[in-house]
Image (cartoon, rainbow, N blue to C red):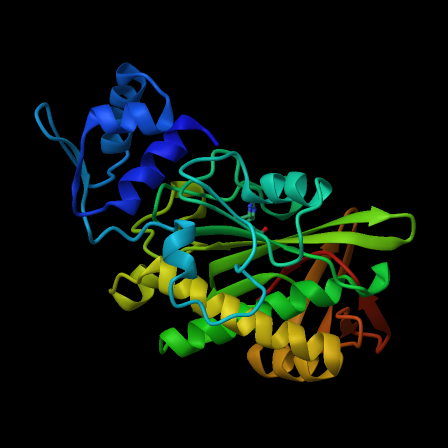
Length: 323
Ligand code: BTN
């Protein structure tokens, strides 16, 4: 674990109390100057840390950090988040980290969390805006025993779990946009990036990345009209830890349904939570465009649209506009 993350976790374990520089150097086997450098950076990043030459460092009690201890405390799941949790104050992309962990054998339910991403990734090579401690940047490792062609179902299941968590914590009018967006008032509140590792024809692991704009106060110019946050929509700040616990709870419940009953109940719920059925849309798939009315999603999670001639198209992936 990087010294930066170790220092933060150590302060967090004792939050509300002073920790001497000397005890940090001893426990973490890092120099005083390394500690000083990281503390300066943490303060610049807005972490509520006090320092005093005599007493050392203090992390305020009320911080909403996504440390494993905070997440696990009161987490009502059996598997998700109960096993490995990798925590970063900063990383390139939690999906990249989770894929590395999965390749090295991380079990189902392993979780990667970061306070900030420097190369947060969205679909189609887009960036995911990931400012420090404002949003949730989380990736989950799953090992579902399903054929590869059914993998898109996992993205839809994830969208349902995110929507349920948001509905139980807020009064927002949440809508799922196929395949991976969570919208409020037509603006994007959350996105899902599913990445799959295969062994031959079967799935080795699925990494499900969630980016959720929780307390993000503002967005860069290029996405200002398209993105929103829970804070922007409600005027209230939310505990990211509570949002994550709620998400994992819903995720596990739906994942159990998926494994024990099948996809149909999830598909039904997805249909209720989307605002796309019956709407006219355009889907872009690499160099092709399809326009038509959304009829449904099918048993594999593909989008079914009917064009002006009445011809039906089954879309497995693509970028939807018009919603
Ligand atoms: C999209 O809407 O295109 C998907 C966005 C997914 C963003 C999340 S943030 C956590 C995880 N790590 C990443 O690099 N991406 C996903």
